[in-house]
Every structure is written in C-alpha cells, then in structure tokens.
Image 1 (cartoon, rainbow, N blue to C red):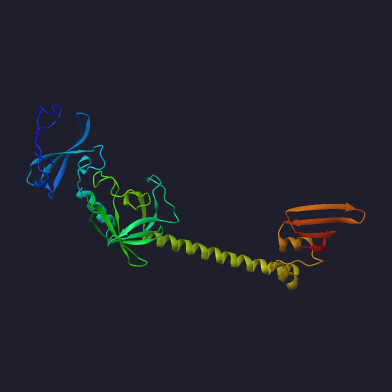
Image 2: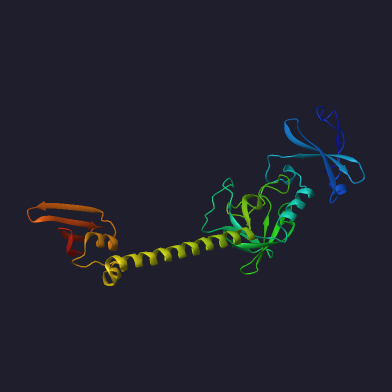
Length: 298
C-alpha cells in the first residue's frame, strides 16, 4: 500500500501507529501469525494480523473489506497461509479421489446430471461430472489475469488423462477476490466432497460381495423350492408352476404357487357347491369350482 503515516492524529483509535510498509518491501516474504483481532477505524472493519518476520521484526497487517467490488484495493489483501496449504498438500497431492457430490450449503444450484464446470491447465472450459475419479498432482497458485492468484488443486482425470485445476475457494478470505469467477456451477474445492478411491473401491467390492451372496442365496432357495414342488406335485405340474403357468384341473394351492396370491377373491355358494373368482390385475382371472380350476381368463 502507498506509504503514509498512520498516526494518532489521523486515527486516534488505532491500536498501533507507524508507517505503512510498501507492498514491494514484503511481497514474497514469509511471516508467522502471532496474533489476530478485529478493529474498526472510522466505521470501517479491519482484521489486524500481528506478524513476525524471519528476522524477528513485528508487522501489523490491516486486512479490510471495502464496498467497491471493482476495486481490488477495496477487497481483502491477499495472503497465502502456508501451514494451511501444507495440510491440504499432505491430504490431497499424490492421492486418488472420486468427486462424490457438492456440499448442500454451497451457493447456487447445480444439477447432479450436468456436473460442474472446471478449466484445463490450458485454460479451456471442461465439464466435470460427479462420480469422476481424479488424481491430485499438485497444489499451486493459479490466476486468471483479472485478480489475485488463488491456491488451486491440479487434478488428472483418470478416464482420459485430461489435467484440470480446481481453485480452493471463490471468496477472498484470505486467498483471492470475490468475482474471481461467479458461475454457480463452477467447481471450488471448499464446496465439494471428495471420497478417497480406496474407500470407493472397498465399498464397491463389499457391494459386489453382497450381490453375489444374495445371488447364491436366491439360487439355493430356488433349488430347494424346485425340489419341494417335485416331491409335492410331481415333475410335470412342478415345471408348470416354476414357469409361472396354470392349467385346468389345478388346485387353488397349485395356482397360488404359480401366480401368487390374488388381489381379490369373489365367492358364490349354492346347492351346486362353491364358485370362486380370483382377480389378478385388471384382465386376468381364475375361476374355481369346488376348489378346482375350471377356467382361465387373460
């Protein structure tokens, strides 16, 4: 920032006084954050960071948010918190993930069908679908030339080896300028949920195991049912039942085995005996005379 005095005569409520340090004097240097507090000066909100340089000098960083979104000086001044970046680097770089979904609290609406918008390392627009497997290659500062560079994760899409990057966040707290990109369908790391590939593959393997277990159980039950029907009704009738077919002369029990229970049963009794109509759906009927299938209507 331009050098001028921040004195008690200008801002008597300021907690610290002294000269503003020109940006070029500290740009690219590393400082340890040793304190943080909020402060207001003449109605403006400031965050005051107390920093210590590698040489042991103390510097106060006044980060403030203005109202003019077109003026970069009215936004938070950019800083990269290296400790946080290293945590992200350890958690992501070199590992493989599936893009699972977008966090519910992320701004805007995104269709799960159409996915998210991202950029390739050549700056071309690219669609990133949910369920895509990615390998994180790097974490670096990337900008679009209109604002501050922000920490961005470089991924390689496993299916086609296309390399894309996803910025950490869309807001300047503390990495960039709001308006870096405002697309509601733009991909930002802090708005996404990633699942490690090993967890996804383990889950798929477990699901496949359960499906195979269910298939074997079903196969076992079918064999047991077939054997029971053979013993109970004989081969010819059992084969019809297993194929879901009925024939005149079958008992109600046989028909229930073949077609299942009816949706409705209408019964008439008289001197001739008992007449039953079994209703299946809208156009299928079985008619029984004294417990024996007498006619079929489909």
